Length: 419
Image 1: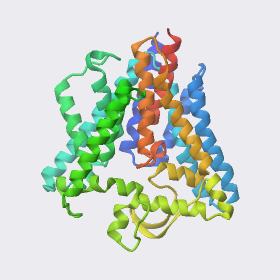
Image 2: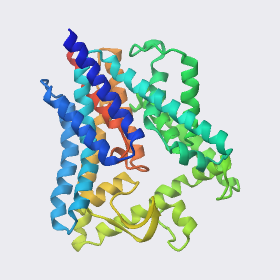
Image 3: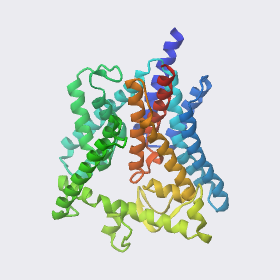
Image 4: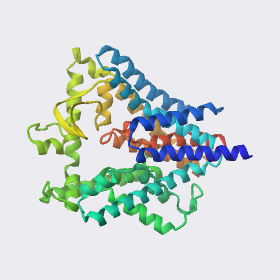
C-alpha cells in the first residue's frame, strides 16, 4: 500500500513538472530531454497493454517523422538541422506517450485533472503578479509591453478555465478549491492580460466541442451559423472603423484582430512594404516555404517535402529573436510546415491524426465520464486543427497539451475497460 501511494505521488509530481517546466525554462532542448527522461522512468515501470486508439495516434505521428527522416537523405541538410527537426517532430510523440503512461500509473484518476488545474492556477498567479508589478513599476499600459513581459499565451491556463467551467458541482471529477472566488478572479484576469486572439477563439472551440457540439447535428449547425454570422457582423463593423496601425492599448488590440485573416491567408504580400510584410508575416513565410517545395525537379518536393533539416529561405535577413535570420527551420503555419518537411503525403497523415481524434466524439458510451473524455479528445483535435494555422499546432515548441491528450487517451481506455 505504501509503495502504491509512493508511486502515485511520484508520477503526480512528474506530471506537474512536465507541465510547468516549459513555462519556467525557455529551452526547447532541455524540456524535450527532461520529457524523455521522465518517459524512460515511466516505460521502465510499465506492464500494461496500450489501447488501440493510442497505437493509431502514435503510428500516424511516427509515419510523419519517418517520412521526413527518409526524405532528408536526398537533400544536403546539415546534421545539426536534422537533429533539431528530429526533436521538433518527435516532441508530440514523446509528450503523448508520457501523458499516457503517467495516467496509467496514478491510482486516483481525478489527479490527472486536479494536477493540471493546480499547475494552471500557479501559472496564472505568476503571470498576474508579474504583470501587476510591471504596471506598478513602469505605468506602461501598452498591450505590446504587457505581452512582452507576461507572455503571449498560455494554453494550460486556457484548459484550466475550460475544465473549471465544465466541472460544475464536481460533475466529472472531484475537486476542492480553497478561496474559489479569488482563484477564478486571478484566472480570469490572467487570461485577459494575455490579450491573445488565439486563446479567445481556442477557448470557444474547446467549450463547444467538449459539450458535445463537435458532433454534426441540426442544433450544432444553428450554433455554428449564428457564430459565423456574428463574426461577419463584427468584422463588418471593425473594417468600418479607422484604426491606426500604430495604435496602442485596446485600439491596438482591435487592429490585430482586424488584420488576423490577412495575416494567415493572404496570397499577395509586398516584400518592399515593411509594414505590410510584418502584418502578413505568417502568410509570407508560408508562401516562401511553398515556393521552395514547388521549385524542385518535377515538383517532387511538394509530394514528399524536403525532409528533416531543411531550411526555408525568407529572401532577406529578418530580425527574428535576438539576431537577424534568413534561413529558418520552422514557421507558424503547421500545415505548410508539414508540407515543407514531408510533402502532401505527410499532410494527409497529419489530417488523419486529427480526424481519428475528432471521431471519438461520435463513439457510444455508457457513462457520463466516458462521454466527457471522448468529447475532450475531440475538442483537443479541433483545438490543434485551429492552432495549426497560427502557431504550428502540435509542433509548437512550447506546447504541453499533448501531455494531457496522452492522459485522456489512457482514461478513455481505462473507463471503457472498467465498465
